[in-house]
Length: 279
Image (tube, rainbow, N blue to C red; front, side, top):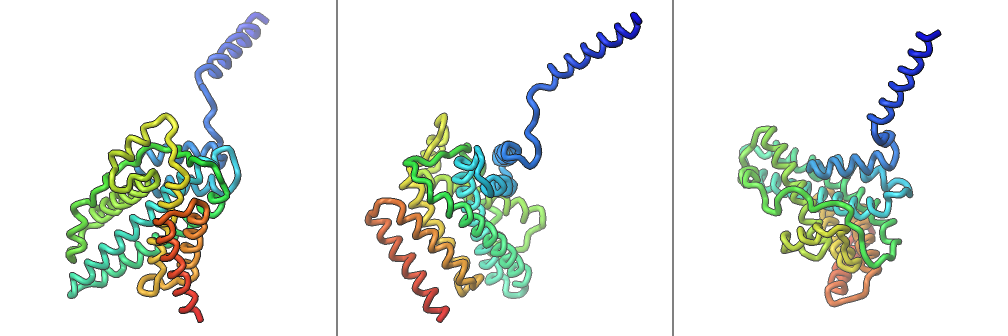
């Protein structure tokens, strides 16, 4: 009897010790809290492709993280789109430079534009519901992105027609994706030409962007990136129209200025051209 009592006491003590040592329970996989934590981890490690995947899951439903996840995803997906577009243009220049063997470069152009197309559609998916939010400030629930605003030096080798090893190609692509996200983040806070100033903005305890500034930058980005779907590239007029329409909606949500009117005119011209081509 004493032995049983002793064993019971020891078991209770072991259970108590285990409950004290385990600490907070980790978020269950598949929950919004899980994806939010995963997005933070991958963003800080500089893996913006994975970050975008986690944010995409959060943006598919209304949850406690949606309001902060949506503008974050807009910045990341727009940055990835820009990074892929820039890589495609680099390989296209390489194909022109290497007339003896342009095929490997053209394959990379196709691959990069396909990836850019996918991230551009994810951007549009996040933008559409985001524009329904009328708050004066946009929360930026992420830090200043890792990477450099400068193009990596090895990029010039590709554009001059020199094929690089797979490992160097992958590292250059990763650097260009980081650069794309960083530059979009700078534009989102109104510091497109001043990364140092943008970095100071992100040092605030709860960094935010003025809604007008954020939406104008977004509209301009989507208009510029819509060229990806033009007749000389992917030739997908429906997607070009989608990007321009969302850009126009973003402009409609902010007070008109000389700059917004000029951009709106360009967007409407692009939409008219698409309509004329489809007739």
